[in-house]
Image (cartoon, rainbow, N blue to C red):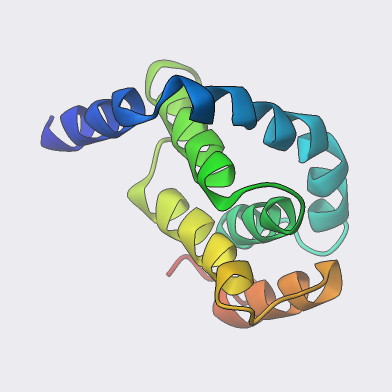
Length: 121
């Protein structure tokens, strides 16, 4: 219950301006997801990879916001909401913001190192 309250408070703390920027992530999401899924199908890798590739194209706050929205949708929908998914999203964003990944291929390679096949850490 505390986790849900935390997520909701984070969600409502975003400004109206940040909500407008979310369009960037939505615009690139389908393209980026195809790229990531062609490189691996395991859950945490996909969260890391999609977040990393989106951060190459969009503001990091935007990408983190979309990750939170996705997990909130999983809470009330058919998905499986997990804190580790948000952690994987953050790690993907951090690869770009720390300049460890500057290209799509570097994102995929780094996320494979963080989340080898079958890993859920």
